[in-house]
Image: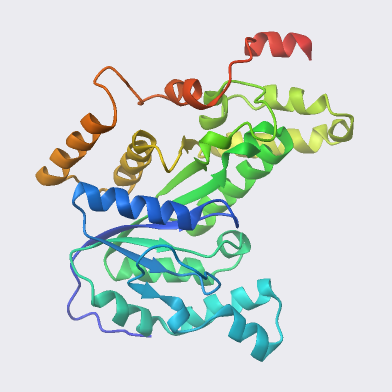
Length: 313
């Protein structure tokens, strides 16, 4: 590991994109790279996933050059989960390789496409230590935690998502933005019980517990669910930004949240490009600055209020 701190590198901003497998991390990195390039930012994408094959974006730094999951599984006879843990430990032990690769790119905005194993961000410390070292190299990073939006349609899964998001926020220790991805598919597996802002702002979860108790299977776990909800609300840290990666307006909302979290400031040229893109993408009367706008676009109206839902329960 390099310990040379005589010359501190210039300040560099970026995002570490994390989340469960299949949540859309690589698609997000590809879409955000194209979006930022259009705005005028010089973007470098770093693939931190040794199991990521068929990368759809130009990859400036690829951890597969150092180690791959297939090689680890074959040589050490490990499964995919144990192999991925070993890969991250190996990368942590060879951070000088990563530092050398990153030094080749100056005055850039970085996107780190990270592995999808949840334990890496809730229990195991290698990824956290790598992020900490990036901070020592003068990176100002925001953790973008991506989860599938369709989990909102299942109260039990949504509580699990909240617990995972909270645990990740506390363990990773970076400025954090939670993102509900694939908003265009939010009701693919069922209707939402409440308005979208109930889920994005994580409002009073007692309503969700009452809805969950309507299921005979979960009724006997009501006390456990209440305690989980109390932990989530006591910390009061988790909220979500809705995202459809093909929708420029929702990409702008996510980017603003990320830039606010890590302190990035727009340059004049970039701001002009952003305004030009907005003018070309949508009419002047269209506003996409609230969750209500997202809900109207992607969620079918059920015609019933939260109070009516509760009366039915």
